[in-house]
Figure 1 (cartoon, one colour):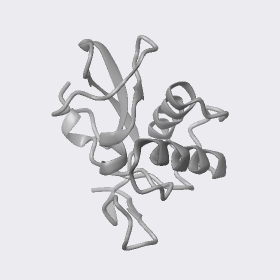
Figure 2 (figure 1 turned 30 degrees about the vertical axis):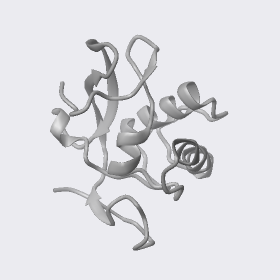
Figure 3 (figure 1 turned 90 degrees about the horizontal axis):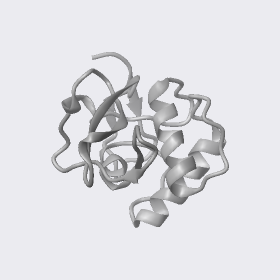
Figure 4 (figure 1 turned 120 degrees about the vertical axis):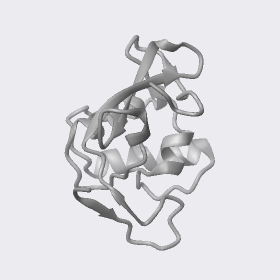
Length: 133
């Protein structure tokens, strides 16, 4: 299964132990489907691998996908550098507050379902539900 993310608080809205997001996978957007897919954090190459987690200290292309969403869809002043540092955590907390979900700065299933993502065509959109490629 690979590395795991251990969430420091049992009260977190995102599950406490899960596979760490390490790459991205293209999934359909809600408005444009597969014509303009969204690159989402994942553990593998299929849409079913998007249930994963990230927290401060993570470093991967999955973090970059999250940073692009935070920068371009939520207006965060962060650098897309694939490093989940304090600035990314702060931007994620702001986005979580804006979406009305638990604002703990940890990326997991609740955050994945709630965020607006940056599509390949540079649009901001929610992922299709259910998520599919």
